Amino acid sequence: MILTNDREFRGYVFDDRLPAHGVALLQVAIAHIPRERRMVLAIAALRGRQERLIGHFTTIYPDRIEQESLPSSAP
Image 1: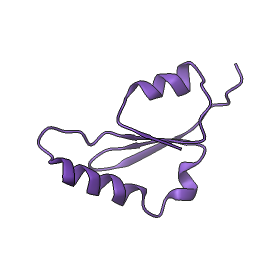
Image 2 (image 1 turned 180 degrees about the vertical axis):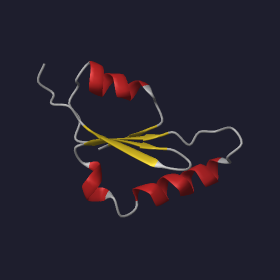
Image 3 (image 1 turned 90 degrees about the vertical axis):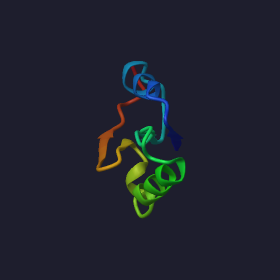
């Protein structure tokens, strides 16, 4: 499982088809939200979703969570 705020992971997973068990992309790095609040949002979004993170690309926004199934790593 990868937890990141690097948007390039989307390309690694969907375009390059690099294998991953799950990716959670934190899109809460908004300048007006303090770092501590961003972490609270991320933890709240992940809590209770552990079994739904594997096999998915999860994007965590301040106001919602979106998930997509990961592609097969085979070209």
